[in-house]
Image: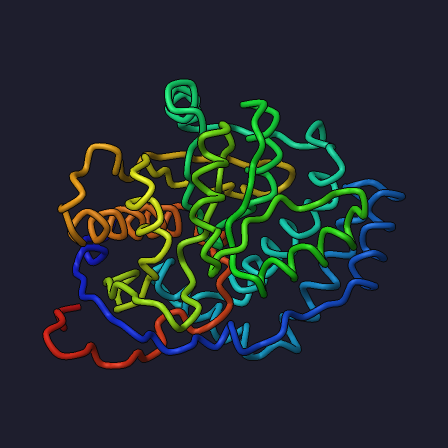
Length: 322
């Protein structure tokens, strides 16, 4: 793992990233059509369509292509070839396509390996639920499907309202019978709801690699350059005084996935006066885990925007180191 995922400096008032200002491509009609084709033809034959979709985005989505190129150059430590860039987009399209089957309970179609599930199972047996910190790395849907079947517990996702609406619209298109179990962040009741879900034994997932633009962030050297990670999700774990686990459902090609679960922090033993230091340490551990898996499985990173974009200068009295 690169040693550059360790330097840091807090930021406040992080600028709104360009992903938040852009609408998602696609439509419910297109998703429903893709779902119909996939379920009628089967996973193998319907994957042929993915190559046409990937080719379209490869040719006619210059902004996403540019950001993919920037990321792959960092993750591969070399100039990406056209094949690398096509494979990156194809990996993303494949995980979206597989949602159709995962949301319809077709786990039998996949070869899924689990790494670290014994740690998580031991934790939920002792504590009831668990807080899982994910990223736009691989597939969350495979994590949700396997987590529910493996543990027999509900799997909820905590996210902001705009993202919640997009997820609900996507689920309605892919499987109208499926309802997302979503906790909406940004509301006063969110913390209490997460607490209650954990006490009830649920697994609660939060994505920790995108800022909404109006929350404090931690500037960390990530894949060779400063990037800002939001601290809000980690503060949630600290306030709830619970252990925190990193999660990723990595796509390995074909029908293969590898789910990784790693403990990155345990706030249950932290004193109330511990302050910001444990939260910062958790953000560093998380960023290091994301970086490690980006280097190991570089075609699984699906943040197609300028993750390393320029940020505001920290306010007075803040650490400016990077």
